[in-house]
Length: 486
Ligand code: PLP
Image (cartoon, rainbow, N blue to C red):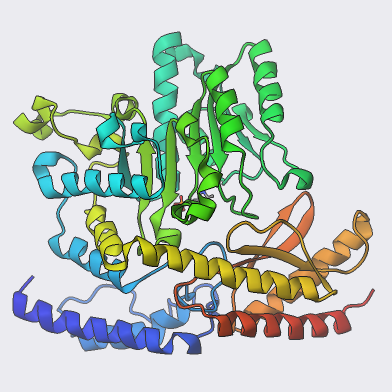
């Protein structure tokens, strides 16, 4: 890294990115390339000699940007947003610039200590109980993804129980969640060696807002105990992926405590909203959890990737994940007075993500972060009322945050033929909207009902974009209804 070149070339890249953002609304939000498109555009082997940056940027413009789905477009409403911000980008630049690896305190004391500090800051913003903070014998750690956080907590829970009851009992361990829990739990369960038949995805109902019923949970646990199985772990969600449902954390926590389950709360998306007092009640009962996670890279103006995981008892993670080969030994670690975050995650090497999160929080301040959440929720409320006012549409799940779930109505509810027509209409509507290039949304299905999800919350989305989206949906709906044969 030669300082002169570095400064010159990075300025060019920054200008390139700034231009990208100036033009972002001109690109089709969903990439329109066909599979394999890149092969014919780029050489099939590496260059022998260095190439000029200008040539690389030209290729990015011509070949890479057309193959991007523009997650930062103000017209991106698919999945959940990954909020970028200037502060998040600057933090990422600093992290990448120093390029330190902080697997142990010794390998970059500032990185370790800043991570401890920033996780306490965010815990305070969320009003997590002191047991999740460094002052209360708990603590937070930054992972790349919720999936990783869940695997680590599952491994910790598994090993805690198996050291008590014996490793041969692994086939008896049971994990509980709702049928709305993110599929990363399924992946995690598999990775820690628990069979798929020992994952209970318990049914939810519209009447309960698609949240997990504590009674359903308790019944399932009792049945498993009767069959000689060992209840291990419960994953509750605050803000499910399909429709933004919230599980009753306090009541679930009481059941988890009664049966000694590890209780994890996945608030990947909606956790960020809980820094606003009006949303904090969704976390009531969090003191009954063993671990809690949220993705700062979703709704917290922090560029990818940054998943915050807090645990009450870091030793349970360390007991499961720690390895200490000779080449990693050092006096600081052996003093037991420092944190070696390698023991709180899967990989050894780790990025200085705390720097990014610290820059984000300092540059925005808590007030701006709250303003950001509230303005997205207000935009979602506007869209929700527009949908409600058009009798051709219906809302299919209660909105709690900034995710609006709706569909075009074909016929009466509860009729199988009508449902297949509904599905046909809504698939077509979604396809038309996405192929227009002017917006991107995705669908989901709950209880056999196909619907369109609109996750409002890209950093650049304004009222005019939501108004434009609704106009587009209405126009396409008119066409679809006209062209559909009943
Ligand atoms: N949990 C919930 C509720 C989510 O919405 C998502 C992703 O959208 C995940 C987990 C998966 O997160 P990650 O991609 O960080 O593993």
